[in-house]
Image (cartoon, rainbow, N blue to C red; front, side, top):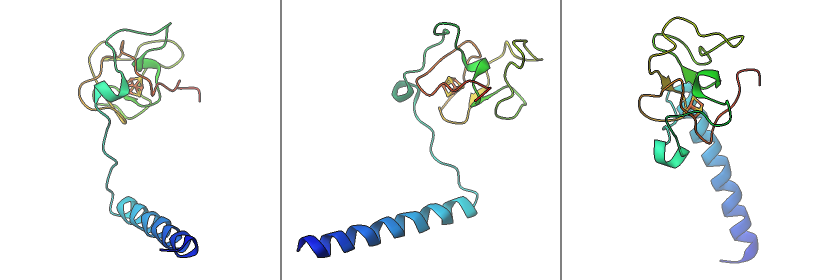
Length: 104
Ligand code: SF4
């Protein structure tokens, strides 16, 4: 395979990957979540940063970003919830490498 044909082939592959991604989104498919190990999740805060203050945290019965607002804990904030990005039950006091503050 020459360099030119390889470039064309890679370009077509990128277009197909983009189409496949759009199709999955239209079908309502969700991206697979990372394992706790891959996200380097821990059950304790990291320098004051914690899941309850992360935009990906989902409080029990809540929506994403339903963690602490204004530094206060809402109903159920002491119970484990879930995360948009990481598998399993997530403690509001936990932390991982994907942390993103609610204000971002
Ligand atoms: S992305 Fe990480 S820090 Fe944020 S809620 Fe999920 S597990 Fe917690």
